[in-house]
Image (cartoon, rainbow, N blue to C red; front, top):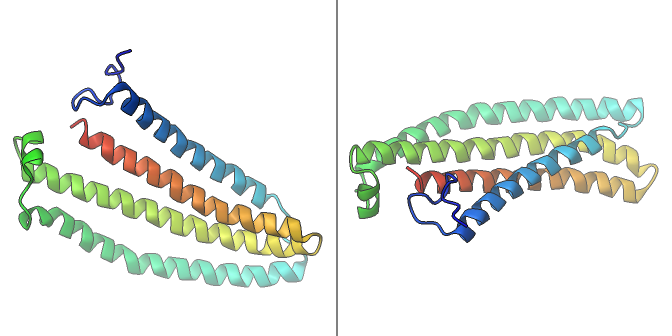
Length: 188
């Protein structure tokens, strides 16, 4: 079966197994993200407990969201500086023979753009995992505390689900980003 009719492998000779493996990795990444979304729904439908618990949780949530906002303001300028450094990095290290062959015209421009886009994609996915994971932990805290009044098992399940959400976001976005970068380097 010739899978080269797909976008994968048509230029760099990926065999059928490699092409199918890449597709399976993409499916796995989307499955991980879907699982995170389903777990999120499971956690969010749990009760928040007593009015006093909600009052304490709300104060914690406001403080945590303020911290996350200030962290974002501090890190974005560093991401901007690193983006510029990635663009200019092609002036420090000469392109490899493979890169020059792959991009015969405007080699430095293509490499600079590729590195910079890959960096921004990684930084964005990392930001998403950190922000969404922390926000999920904030949401799960009060629900886990409330559940602990009924059952240790229920409380641990909520806490486990919240941690798993962050793990699935990390895995799903990491696999997706890595596959996109790999595929773009095999098809340009």
